[in-house]
Image (cartoon, rainbow, N blue to C red):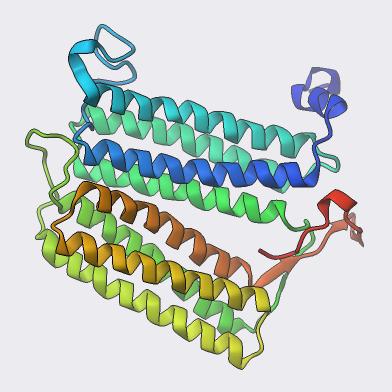
Length: 325
């Protein structure tokens, strides 16, 4: 496409965002991804999952909720509209990354990956409604939102470092332990999704199909994996101290441990108080924070230099940021 017809090139000619602006735009997509997860949980916890009875319109005759649909319709439709807000932030991150010189293709690819995840998850959300809150589609909807959060964190990380080859800061066994931690945390989230699909908060006041397992037993498995993740986190801290690992990585592990402890307290409170909606919502927020913290631990074990065409480049004053999170 000729440069004159490329809208991104035209924007780049007229606007040069700073590296800090690109970083903040990427961080904004992380925040919005968390908000989407939490508000999606609010839809389920307020029994508003079918507040809009169809998709993409709210009813067969109306794009927006009608007065007769009450608060449930407003809540469900508001969550749908947040997807548009998320698209705005993702679009801003893409445009900012593309407009900055030199153009970093790695950043724009991560931005476009977020865009397509948002689009696919919007369609999946429609399938959730059209299938009457089938727990398997609801679970897939949540896991897709977690995938979006993952890519958003990766883009935020890449915005804070260079495009040179990744350089490991620790030995291979330490990296393997980190990825074991990531895998265990991922399984923890998946099992938590099954707990949601089998538990009492179905998303609608009427009878909704649930995953045919005892939610108390699957909750116990979820708790067991919490202990596994905590154990791996503690092991990671001791290993990093033993090998004199990067200070940033050790700090990230401490942050992860603090988030895990907070999430554990919330988890026990929600179980002891028979799953009140507000506490379950806080627990969903905590799951996002745990996942972000786990990813940041793994990403802190390598760095990328600022290189251009094989030559180490000194970053501009506005982009002098640490190489690793």
